[in-house]
View 1 (cartoon, rainbow, N blue to C red):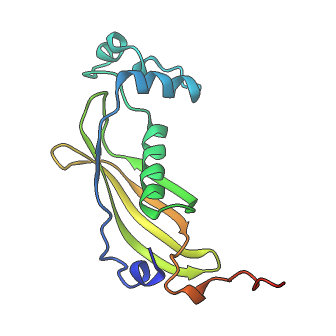
View 2: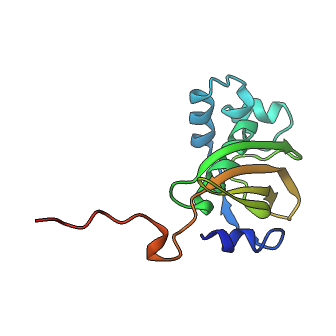
Length: 156
């Protein structure tokens, strides 16, 4: 990605969507590593007793997914500045979800390009499950060989 690629298309550039589903095992493991002991995230019978069709995706896993896919879109060397989101609907294990994002703002900075994405996780019917923003810094690709430094010439 070059600065022109991003900065020239603010509000127009749509990131390629990413379809995925969380498995029960993934939700169990995420509960373990995040110290989330609420049974709706790993016990299907308990989740059903609470009115859910299966174990429930953790809010913090949604945030991790928003961040991870944004960083993958931005490319190698990108760094996360901030992430914020709001849960709009419950998602459960096995449910087909789609990550989407649009570039809301981009500006050159010393490290490359500072980018703000409007992000969403959509349910299979297109209804929003999660909405939010991810801000990151992406390293701009060199546009010419002279854009970087070259090593000193060899001496004999």
